[in-house]
Image 1 (tube, helix red, strand yellow):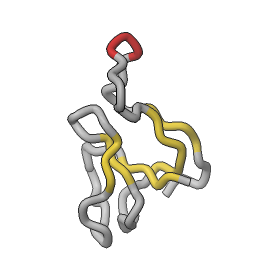
Image 2 (spheres, rainbow, N blue to C red; image 1 turned 180 degrees about the vertical axis):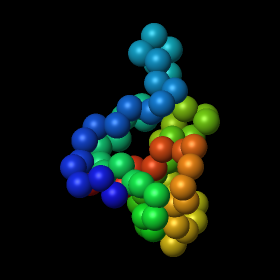
Image 3 (cartoon, rainbow, N blue to C red; image 1 turned 30 degrees about the horizontal axis):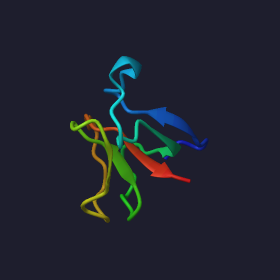
Image 4 (cartoon, rainbow, N blue to C red; image 1 turned 30 degrees about the vertical axis):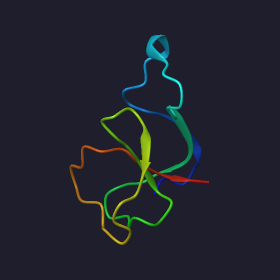
Length: 72
């Protein structure tokens, strides 16, 4: 996990296409290879939202294509 918490934008965020009800930013620690997912962690879903972790306890592997954040 990155040591500093910061504001993370969804990778697919486009300010010109703002959609009501979609959470485009989340504040927290970026998760990295080897981190264990916990309840409350979120990922950048292809639907444009930050979605909750579906499988707490999974370990993030090398080369993951999904951005995971642990909100603070």
